[in-house]
Image: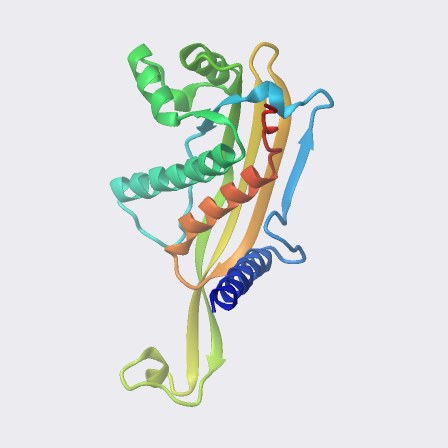
Length: 239
């Protein structure tokens, strides 16, 4: 009985993973597999074992546009910092599972505030330089959300029956389907501090329809995980 049970569970898990891979693949037209759509490049001298201790810095998302949504200044900032946090968590969780030791953004924020530095105004080079000094790391993974927009869309479709009082009932058989078009692009660069050399890069862009707007930050988080998954794992230590 137990073997059948465990085989069933294994089969179910495999099915779930396959479904998840399909789901991610369907998010990226023409690509397949969980790390589909991630373009990577690396420096000839890049060796993961030289980068055991990493700091991940997600740059503040600039000009995040939710076209057609009027968000108060505060609401917008909240959703922005939530997006940045999800992107950071996606990278940190995956890289830690890959065997790296990570210094978090909170450590850097505290140190920056203490020194009176405004991150948004710093160039990448200045940011890595300051972060390296404050966090005692020799390399930093700089992540930036280069594009992020969600636009409300609608398409006409005919449905035979409509519930009374719904927009479909009011417009006869014409059913207006609302959805959101999300365009997002995330890039990551591993920078070696002492010579500002870019050792590894990973980029991903998606353009897809979402059934509701709440999914946008979750999609950013899963994009971050996909890019981090494409980052070479830290070699297991030999005893």
